[in-house]
Length: 160
Image 1 (cartoon, helix red, strand yellow):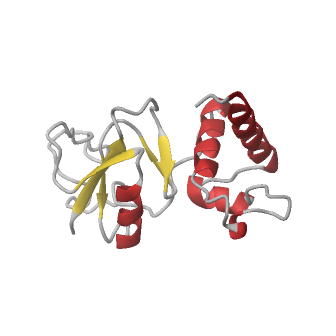
Image 2: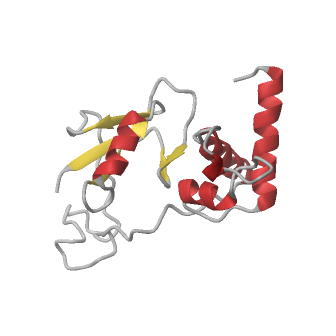
């Protein structure tokens, strides 16, 4: 399977960014095309300005330690017959820090097309199920409302 590598753009002033129900950081994240992501998701990731995507192994890519192989031999979990390192298909765990959660929800909402009424309620509030589809974890109405309030406040003050 082909592999792509994705990370937050080094020139951006964020440490974490959520896209396509996945969390990205400044460290390269390998994704197996056809296993972790489909072609449409690859296209969305490549189009995202906050992310850097490489189809070649980046020179500064560091292979994460294999948690399933404490010996450090480099054997992959898949080749050892264990499934602990195999993709689970589950989204990343929800952040527990309230500020990180809020930032992720704000980032998810900012991805929405304001003209697409399918993404909003009749009162033009982002639909919770759409936010959850982007973040990959449950979001409460109170969290959604706090994120919208933050976006409105930033828009009114003209801050970035």
